[in-house]
View: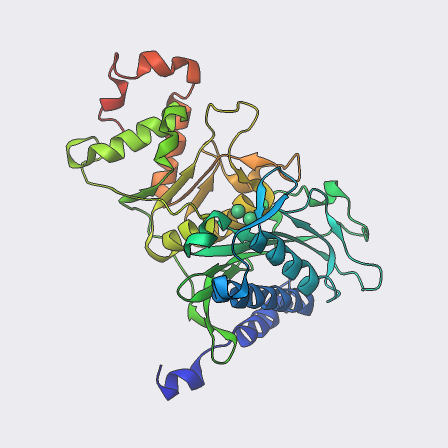
Length: 366
Ligand code: MN
Ligand code: MN
C-alpha cells in the first residue's frame, strides 16, 4: 500500500458516520447514532476474536471445550471464547435490549447495571468452527433487529422476527486477511482489517453477485439423502457440456457458511444446504435467526437471491429461536432455477420412479 492509499483509505468509522448522516435525513429510516455505536462494538468483538484466532495454537485455544451448546453440539474452546467476547463487548454500550447466541438456549438479558437500547443482537460467534483446528477460514455472523416498541425485557417471542425486519446484518471472516462485510440495507460493503493500525478500511464497496455462475457448493456426501429437486439440479451441473445446461460447472465445499458466502460475494456461485431425508422433523441444517437471515440479507442486498428452495428465506416467520432451515443462495438465476425444480416435482415418495426409469432427469428443459 503506498502512502497516498493509506491517507485516502475510508476507515469503517468514517463510512458508518457518513451512512448515519444520510440515514438520519431520510424519513422512517433505521438510522441514528445508536446503530453506529452498536456496529462499532460488534467490530471490536470481531477484532478481538481475530486476534485470538490469529494466535492459533500459541494461545492454547485450539481443540474441544469438553462441553455441548444449547443444541447438543460439541463446543470448541474457541466457540466458548468467541461467545464470551461477543457478550462482554456488546452488553454495556446501551444500544441493546437483549442478545441471542447460537451457544445459548435462551436470550441473554442485558445485565441490570447497564442501560438498555432499542436493538436486539443475534449472532453465531464462531461459524465453521470445525475448521479451526485445520487453520481454514472461519467467521462470525451477526444480525440486528429492532426490539418491539416499549419492551425492555425481551422474551424469546420478541426475537422471532422475519429476516426482512433486519436493520443491519454482517459477518467477519478470519482468513488470510480479516474482513468485515455488512449491510444496513443500502448495499453490501466489505472492509479489510489493517493489522498495523488495528482498523477496518473500506476495500470492497457495493459488492454485487453476478447473475449467472458455473460454480456450485454443496456437501455431496449427503447426496443419497437429498430431495429430488436438488438431485436434479446437481445432476445437471455434473453433466456439464454434454447435459441440459450445456456448460461445465465447478464444485466447491469449505464447510464454513461464512467462507462460502464470502466466495459467492466475491466471484459468484450458488450454495445449497437443502433439507433432506435424514430427519423429517428437521427442515435443514443451518439456523434461521443468526445464520440464514443475516447471510440472506447480505445476498439479497448484493443482488443475489436467498431461498429455502421454496421461496425467500427473509419472509419466513420464525417459530423457534434455534430453528433450522433449508438454505439455498447466490446467483439469482440459479436460485430461481432451483426453486422452479422444487415446484416442478419434489415429493420424496416420487423419488424412485422419477430417477432413471422414466428419464426425467435427462430431459433438456428450462
Ligand atoms: Mn455457524
Ligand atoms: Mn458457531
